[in-house]
Length: 49
Image 1: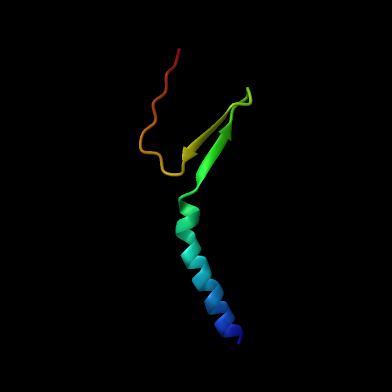
Image 2 (image 1 turned 90 degrees about the vertical axis):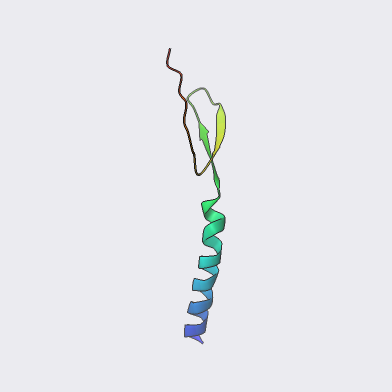
């Protein structure tokens, strides 16, 4: 019984990993503005004054 429960929980974890990998991240700057970016970023462009 314990072995099958362990296998079932491992299987559930393996199926949930792709869902966790596609999560977005939300950042808040010092002024309180929030920006949501995808977990995998291809390019970053920064303007510096």
